[in-house]
Amino acid sequence: MIAIIDYNAGNLTSVKRAMDYLGKESVITDDYSQIINAERIIFPGVGAAGRAMADLRKRRLDRAIIEAFENKKPILGICLGTQIIMEMSEENDTECLGIIRGRVSRFSGGSSGMKVPHMGWNSVILKRNHPLFQGVEQGSEFYFVHSYYPVPDEPGKVLGETDYITRFASFLAAGNLAAMQFHPEKSGGPGLKILANFSEWDGRDYVE
Amino acid sequence: MLSKRIIPCLDVRDGRLTKGVRFKGNIDIGDPVETAAQYYRDGADEIVFYDITASHERRDIMIETVRRVAEKIFIPFSVGGGIRTFEDMRLVLLAGAEKVSVNSAAVRDPKIISEGAEAFGRQCIVLGMDVKKVPVSDSIPSGYEIVIDGGRQFTGLDALEWARRGEALGAGEICLNSIDADGTKDGYELALNKLISSSVNIPVIASGGAGTPEHILKVLQDDKADAALIASMTHYGTYTIKEIKTFLHNRGIKVRMNW
Image (cartoon, rainbow over all chains, first blue to last red):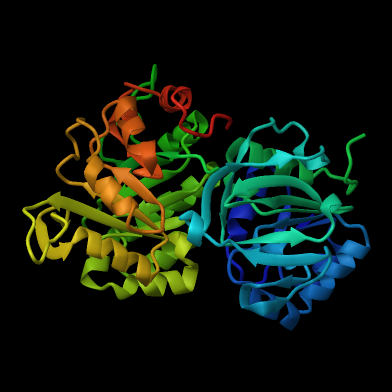
């Protein structure tokens, strides 16, 4: 069973529908014990970091995610979920989970005249292969909608990068945690492939 | 670099397409769900549903259509046309649409933009603008006026001023439809798209007038638009999405080629 963490942060049903389409059993839940007992966990989200962290803390779900991470459960972060695993977000000056060291910064479109949010289809340049990208064609594009992006301290945690205003980390991995700034559930075939890979993933962050 | 988006628009009335859609080698399809699924498989980057259901009571049919579409396609799609209230927005988004588009309702009550953006995020809110060319005057300095109710009603609003105001109110995107070019298949209204795109800092979808891939190329070049809305050129099997994208790709426009 895959637990999709429910913390009032939008787009949960689209992740659930994608898992249904793939025939993978999943449940949207905010129940602490259901989350730590799930086989694997998806941590999605659209919204603002400040409110999201407050909601997580109120339901002790911050603890559930950290505990599941320490117990080596496969975890997938999506969009805001990916930002919240960092230490700190500039959005509402929010202290986050700190599973990956580093911060979350805002795009500054200003001088470049480029539009913020970064919204639409963009490619992910993989620095090395990862089990979740097995069978995903190089150069595939994914759907992004965000104004903030993760800036990890350790370059080794960055597996994929995307160019928009700056070159930013769009795919992070730390052992049994994989996190992406784009929305695999809105990214057509390549996105569904990542979700299908996740539902079979053993949590190792390298490809033999 | 972001790719430019190609977005088919489907007109829906009472849960059915208003005109049949005929893909290459296929018979007419009247079901918006099947048609959307086919466009998804063919490489559309996003899909727009334009609900022209006259009676408000039949809103449930559209919500049910949205729900069925969301089970089958895994790219963003938006719904416009029938969105009159905050509650309409909420229901359509809950049913699985990524975005809602407001047009006449926003002219009548601009608060709907800010309320929607606040509740759902600005990326969900598209400002649909129907625009007609008029003589330049003190009240319409850009020479483009906003019309509503399917183009019948002039509003006295200057299109440029309205676009900027929509952005300030919280719209995350503008769908810019030229009433003059709509249905002509003579190409998009380039001057209008250039004017609006260069004046706001949110994406602009060009709409109205597409007849050939060359028309799409012209409006996407030099950042006159971030996306192109198409209808008849693919609905009747004249072109496939793949043919259009290959044409653009070969001429240096970045478009999504794997799906």
